[in-house]
Amino acid sequence: MDLRKLKTLIDLVSESNVSELEITEAEGKVRIVKGPVGGPVA
Image: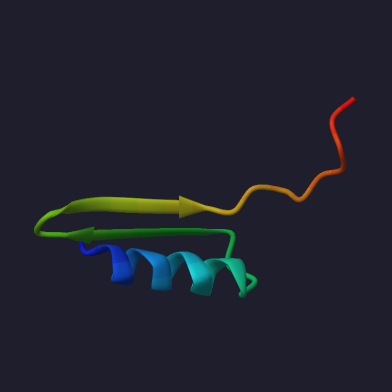
């Protein structure tokens, strides 16, 4: 998977209500997980 496609997938996940996305292609598997938005760490 090329970097442009990967960046597009990351942008789509970050802008949507999807919290996790996993795609398997011939070249390999990519899993994108959106973590919780938290405050500053003390």
